[in-house]
Length: 355
Image (cartoon, rainbow, N blue to C red):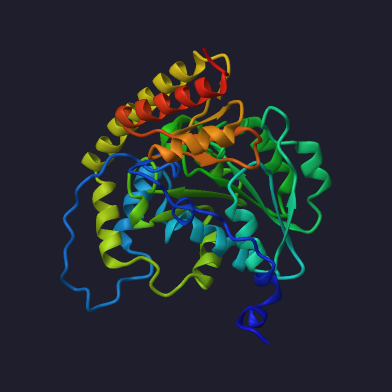
C-alpha cells in the first residue's frame, strides 16, 4: 500500500485546480491570475501576535457590511472566497448523497471543492451566448443543495441576466441555495444581486478583496446571506480563520479613503480594458468577448502558439481549455497590456494570420 492509496478514494480521483501560481510564469508580466497591478502600501502592526484573533473580527465585519450595504448578521469573513465555497459544501451537502450544480465554462473550484468533499457535481453548460440554461437547470435540480453561478463569469467575463437569477431563486425556494460568486462585482457594482438578499433568504453571495482591492496575497473573502445561513456556516468554520494582520489590512482597505482609492484604480483598469479590447479588435483574426471583470477573453487562430510566444517573451496569459481556441488576459498597467498586445500581434503575424 502506498501513500497515494491511503488517501480517500474521492481525493485520489480529484484533478486539482491548476492555479496561476501552480502553472508558473516565465517572466515578470503576469496577466494570468486576474490580479491587480497596483501594489498598495499598508502599515502592519506586529504587536499582539502572541494572542489569537477573534473568529469574526467585529470591526472588519462592520466595515464590510457597510461597504456591501447589508447588516453585520449577514456577513461572514473567511480565507478568500474559496473558503466560502468549501464551507457551503461542508455545511449543506451530505457526502455521497447531495449534489451541487454549476454551469461551465466557469470557475473550476466549485467542482474541485465538491469532489474533495465526496459531493457529486452536475454540470449544466451555459447557453451558446453564455447565459443560464434555465430549462436544463430545472431538469437537474433534484437532489441539488447548492447551485453555483459566477457573475461576472470567469473566464468569459459576461454577467448572468438578472431576470434569470431571479427565476432560478424562485425555482429553488425551499429546495437549495443559490450561490452567486461576485468576485469581480467591484468592476461593475451596479450589477450586484445584493439587493435580492431581502427577498430570498436562500441566496448566498461570495465576495473577495483579491481583485479590485488589490489584495490577492491577503486571502480575505466574504460570504453574504441571510442570518440563518451565516449561523450555519459559523458551525463549520475554523476557530481563527482570519489572522490579525489580515483583519487590520482589510479594515484599512475598507475605510472611506481605501474604498475611494480602489474605485479610482478600478476606473483606470476599466479604461485599460476598453483600450486593449479596441486594439485587439483591430485584427480580423481576433474575436474579443466584452466582459465586466478585470480581464478579457479572446479567440484567435492557434491559441496554443500565441500563448507559447507570449510565454517565451515573458508575458504570461491564461489558457482556457473549457473555451476552445481562447486565451484570457488579465488587465494590468497599460505598459503590461501594451507588451502583451505587441507579442500577440507578432505571433499572429508569424502564423500569417495578420498582415
